[in-house]
Amino acid sequence: MASAPGSPVRVRFCPSPTGNPHVGLVRTALFNWAFARHHGGTLVFRIEDTDAARDSEESYAQLLDSMRWLGFDWDEGPEVGGPHAPYRQSQRMDLYQEVGQKLLEAGHAYHCYCSQEELDSRREAARSAGKPSGYDGHCRELTAQQVAEYQAQDRRPIVRFRMPDETIIFTDLVRGELTFTPENVPDYGIVRANGAPLYTLVNPVDDALMEITHVLRGEDLLSSTPRQIALYNALIELGIAKSVPAFGHLPYVMGEGNKKLSKRDPQSSLNLYRERGFLPEGLLNYLSLLGWSLSADRDIFTMDEMVAAFDIADVNPNPARFDLKKCEAINGDHIRLLEVKDFTERCAPWLRAPFAPWAPEAFDEAKWLAVAPHAQTRLKVLSEITDNVDFLFLPEPVQDEASWAKAMKEGSDALLRTAREKLESADWTSAEALKEAVLAAGETHGLKLGKAQAPVRVAVTGRTVGLPLFESLEILGKEKTLARIDAALAKLAA
Ligand code: GLU
Ligand code: ZN
Image 1: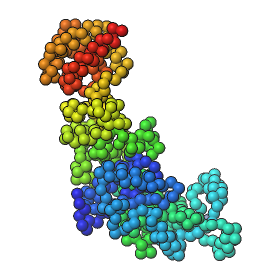
Image 2: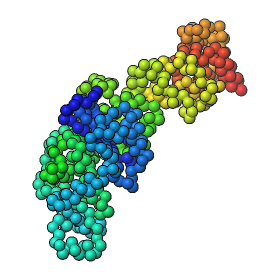
Image 3: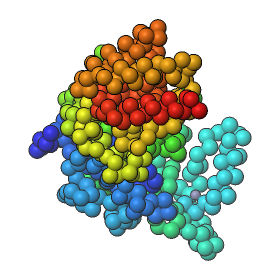
Image 4: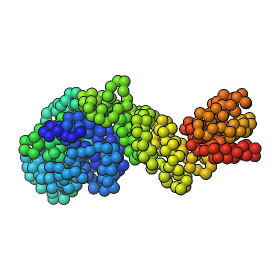
């Protein structure tokens, strides 16, 4: 969907490149993207890389790669450009410097000379007196003499924003009206003593300069919103911002044990989902359900459907639970929705080293194309394809002792001998005929089909579970099937 020219909606996705992208970040990107596309607005992709100690070029490259893999497009940002370039904060330092200076000159900010120890001990004292423990305004009105003294002590000040002494009320797009009283929102630092601007400054300054109309982000950032609104009002006064954007805070995502899913949780790493063979459309479908739903009776939908229906007012403020099982099930449904050809192409990485255990020359394209439709009906994630088809390309089936023990019972040798006999004379152009053969062998020994086919499956594929057996035998071929039954009989005899 192209953005409609003149649409007032401008949203942003503005991660910091600090480590692997995680699913919480993806959910935020998704909701911003869907909101922008729904309104025919503009999605700005901005890189918040002002923390030289934590940001890295590698993470930056990964972020872009992840966004592309997920299928997001952005209207302004890296690789795309736009009227507010550059979109990497590390390349915009002069701007922040300038705004910091203007805020100081207008009295919206001041130099704070307090040392960390002084701040800590006063905070402790306030706490034990039962008073609010945020910054106490110590440096708000320093006299020229006090400043001179601090400077003589060689103290280097930070720049602190002066919060107005008034209650801040705003209507969150997800949570409704929220009220913050001044004692809960103390003056806060915007520039470090070494001159480096902080997130608290650069984020709202860029939102203002980039004319962002709606800020959709995680609930963890809710406490910074009243500060940003106050800063925005100062920027409006200075002619830097036009208006305060609307804010919507997306619900927390809970992981195992009902704890907040953290970016350090292995379960939250986007790379893990890519490596396991989640489809971007399956993963995004699932992540959209963390706070939103298309309708009460439909869990599976496309991103186009989400875009058409997305309304930020429908987002549920309650914490959402990340459920890996459900995520896999939804992904499986998206695998089912692929064209067969698309499915076979997407499996390609798992049919080669390092995932595939067979020699590259053992791979047989015709067998793969024959078996693929049977695999497509049962995978939850694409990486499962390797184990499901290895019996076709390995010289011998895998030796899975647990499967062997489970399937090979007293009398399995007799059953296998009869099955071999019947299979030998069966019509190998028909999976149905192979089934008849095993069924007949089972009858000879008083076994139902399920019991009769288990030893055959383990003899041929090495595992108790797998793709539909008789189609598998047909594709593997008569010669190899019979040889594997012989090998199993030999192992049973030994
Ligand atoms: N760079 C910030 C983060 O990743 C952006 C927060 C925001 O959306 O305001 O947490
Ligand atoms: Zn101070």
